[in-house]
Image 1 (spheres, helix red, strand yellow):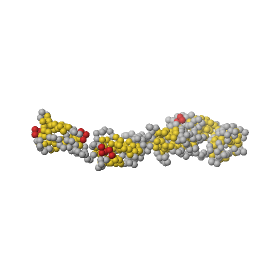
Image 2: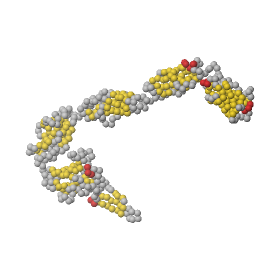
Image 3: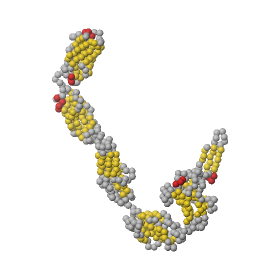
Image 4: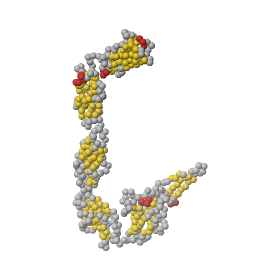
Length: 529
């Protein structure tokens, strides 16, 4: 099925297509169509040559898009009095109903009966059904009616212009404007000496620009009757901003929660405060509050992983006319530093001729480094010890105590920031370049043939000097030693026996951590158990 729905909603046409059958077209005029909207309750009030209809948009909210007011003489046939009335979303409603709607139809004469109905229209222009029909007979009201809308416009010089709407009645003599400088309860005084004419719908009055003024308009009847309007308050154009907030203070806890507090601003129409933050004390402030806040306390969350550890806050005050004060003096909140500085780079650990070690390093790139700590660890020691504390300008140090070190020493440099966070550099080793003697040769070398394997066992004279051992083999006791293997950090060696194992002798040589070799151990033949 295919439908064509025109914008005017008056005509619907389309076609029905079924495979194997000729296409069937159709057309329906607007007066043949009925919607599924039900009629709504309407009230009618007769006036002087006028009829006022009132209803609520609430029952058909989301369904009806407009309403058509229809009028007729006999209560059977009706015609639209004007284009459809569309609900005004920005309107204030009617009476106590925020969705209330009102339509006033001017009539040519009094004492004639008219019939009305209000027809709801949906998005396709289809009308509602079962609409209520009301009968109205307008007559001249002997009493003066109430005022319609009243508007007031105030200039900076203190002049106020009042505009109002009021029906033109034969019984109306004119208008009198009164005002009070002492609040809504008065006393009131005349704003002009002579009554305004019945045609007047505007009046301008001048008073002190800073005065609070209440106005009321009186409709005067020819018979001496009066009808008073609602009170109208003159709003003064406020251009004076509130005073600057003072007493701003910031506290940051260990989780990064910042509490910002300040002293309250005393202003009779204070609307609230706006809070701003920056990581620089004199620029770059960004508003944190989307709307003005009325409290004098605000919480913000800071990231402890930031490298800059200070956050700055400002507060401005805002009044009811949106005049904004100057920013308060910035207050700083200091975050707890949990970020370690970047590590320094230890570039040198050079042994000089007099057995001193010259250490040099490249500085950390972190701006909050407080000092450097030089540490050392001798060969075989598990922990580092403090050697020297250097300022951020010192990037080298000479270790005078290295001459007492028997073999080698490891160094590192720690960068320590103002919060005590540390970062360690790479390691550097310094080795003594000259020792009076070579390391002692291994002793007590024994060689056994067991289960087809030759096993060697020996002993070190200086265990702390051994880095690795070299194993040699020779034919006969006086044969030439040949290097056959290297043993790292052990005093044993094992290998499968060869066919000529009965005439083979072995020797072992020690190499210390400086690379110096001992003499060969005594030659030992293979013993067969």
